[in-house]
Amino acid sequence: MKGKFIFFSIFMLAFSTTVTVKAQAKNPNMPKSIISTSAAIRTYYDDKTLRAMSKGELVELYIERMKVVVKTLPYIALATKPGVTLTDLGIPADEVNKKALDLETEATNVYLEVTVDFLRKMLPYSDKGQLVTMVLFYEQTLKALHEVEHE
Image (cartoon, rainbow, N blue to C red; front, top):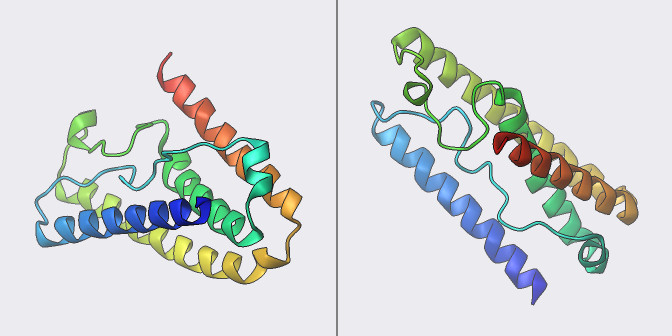
């Protein structure tokens, strides 16, 4: 049951990301987010739940959390929530700034593609307990970010 839930969650996340990216690609005038709208965690897990998961589930969860961290932390001085645009922050949405954002988005996507490919090959060799610890670390980091944004 948990496996189906995790699979469905990952599928929906990938689907929503694809729809958003395609919508932005079809409409180049649509404001682009500084933090990707896919950079969100809907469910946080506790140690007991994570330890009950299979290593394969933990690998996917680790990768998902890593993606959210990579799509969020470099930009927290500008925004802490997905969907915030240049215009929302009062940054001129001129060609120079749009191009800079496009280059950053492309670089992040390339980085994530290469890193995820590497992690899918290497993480199955990792210790299950270490995967649990690092998923919890990523989640605590993101929880702390959300606490800061509410202060």
